[in-house]
Length: 89
Image 1: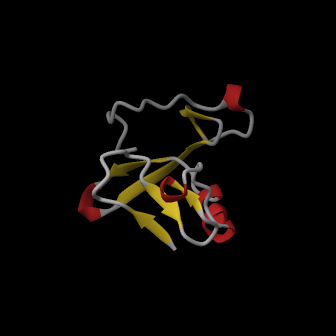
Image 2 (image 1 turned 90 degrees about the vertical axis):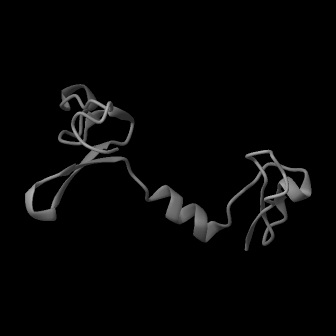
Image 3 (image 1 turned 135 degrees about the vertical axis):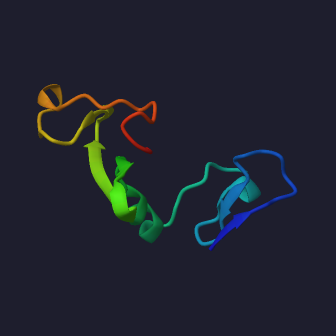
């Protein structure tokens, strides 16, 4: 269980009641294993709105979001632009 204290102005006011870490316990927040697994599977992408309500999704390189994930070698990957001109990040 995760708890946010809305009465605290600190953005780090998150606590993990399962492992007793975070703001409430005076220690750095550590996610539980199942939450950590979900967080580790996330990736960056750019979504570009197409016609007729469809959206194309382009994955960004895991190590550098200024590159698309169109090549395993980061230096050979295409450049991405994160100023929203290529889509929403």
